[in-house]
Image (cartoon, rainbow, N blue to C red; front, side, top):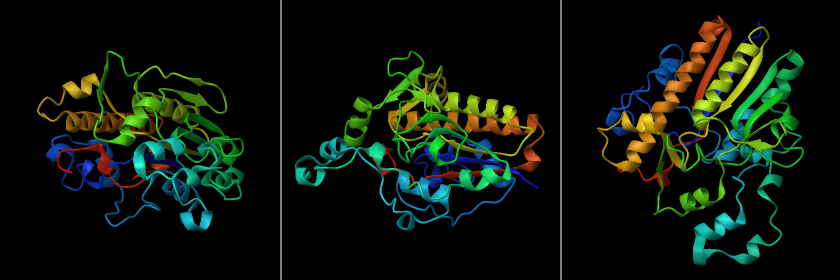
Length: 303
């Protein structure tokens, strides 16, 4: 009577990046069987739409059930330095005067999140991954109804250290957003409101293993898990093993992006397996979605 809810949200995944609808990244040569199984074994919505076209407001809509214009959280918070870097000569200094920190631009606290609604029903709520709904006191996941948080508060993070021997990096020199991210984001997560620390593996791998642990820890009570991957958002970093497995893809950006998708699907499979292993799959509602459409600035050859 109180099913678990596993909400898997990926970041900037395009409609045609998975193979369920007959397409798939790299001409369909990178199968996504685990993601596809969620649709094949349940329901799929080929005419479903996100609440907004950019990261943060779409997540606000997803967690509140309200359009961004109703919550007052209509735009993705951005550092003025990012806007200056991206806009170049078109940047207007006067517009940035008095602009608050992106950490202070969060989901209004008077809005009810899914976690806050489920709490009186006895649910234990967990966030793993990207938050992007404010980082200052009062805006964190712990302040917005969640019992546990393991992830990062801003809108992007590195997947691995740039010089890790097991990483493949793809830097988009043509894209100013990508250049800014490489220079300014970190490979780090935090638990609840604790200090930041480095994960012990590629972030998709790490978040998935932590999700498996959380499923085991909460298998005897109803839980809501918001598993918010940053994959396949830039900066593009794949595990070397996934990259090497796709030697048929010659274009470096395409191959790195495809390798990220390959790893993402594998680890989502591990999370789904954990539900089966603990015999709670039949009482767990699994929802998979992208926060918005695929990003044009990735630089895939077919775009």
